[in-house]
Image (cartoon, rainbow, N blue to C red; front, side, top):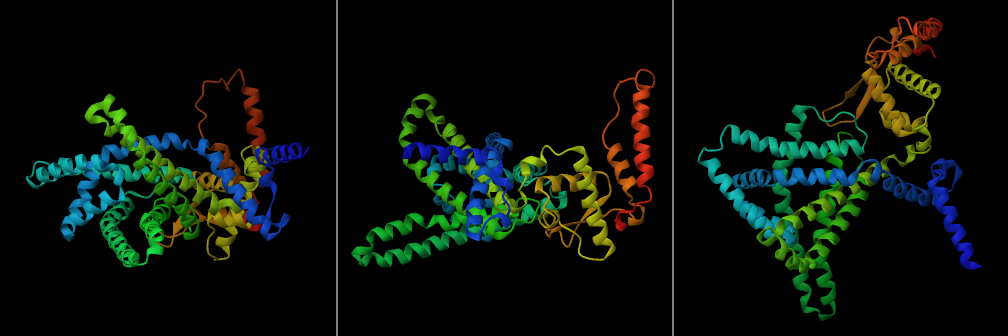
Length: 444
């Protein structure tokens, strides 16, 4: 009887999640302690749902291919920068330390890099070769940004000039970060070694040494989640995702290194190329962990605005018109008052509009040239304001622009066979435009 009751509760909980009832519970329906529990359930549910919706496995495969293609050029650039600062050997050793399961791969790659750099110094790769090297690396980072933007539902990536400046800044700072992490590891190891005199602390020493890469991994993922998407990601949400990804990556590294006994069977099949399928496997799973972390940071930051999300996917035309009219009116009125423009997150949170629907409407309004995005700086928050005189933005103007969006270049005969039907549509639209022509959005 008790088992039956437990099974019924499990089924009820599953129905509660599957039917999206969990998303219909708002903050006003529960206590603060219950809200935290529901938020956690919502985050896990959202990440699980979007894992397949965003095709994370396919994206991880694409990034794996791009990474393999750009591995040698990327390391060549990093080592060149490090060589200019005088710590090339330190950087190389730190890369070996951070990826202990890939020593065979790194040895082969560094041999290619050394040859690459020697040819470059001799002038063989100057010009076209140097351009190809930079293009390969920039293409990888741009691909990472594109994947992050898709998950964050950002329609526009960085402008070209910002890609060069931002990516170059990262390349300049990355070797310094690795050297810093190396110094931090040495510092932790020194402290642990000083504790060896205390026999009771032996297990603690070993635990501290094993966990020393963890904070560095968490910080690296946190930075990646804050920097890469072309949208402002709050630190606490990026850090929350960084904890998951950093921990999962370290655990995966441990399992991968301790699972090297499988290499012997790969050697029998692939011979000297046995490292390659293992490298692909390692990259695929590493990117998958990284992309799941992006989903977590997105879900964590937007969980407040994801209520009724499933309902927004099946929104009626009437309600879409209502929401796009309301959003445009909000933006116009705030501009008229001379107040700080809205961000899409503010529109979503302040007026209880699901974030996906709010972003889609903002994108549609930009496509219709009714609003523009503005920034305080190149890396600042994105705001939205009218793109034309607000005294010209009437309800009729908005709906006419919506009706004219898209293509009508089909071979359906609207001149003879369906002429009456076409005229019905035109006349009904004209009645709407005529009725709404004098209604300015700033006056609503």
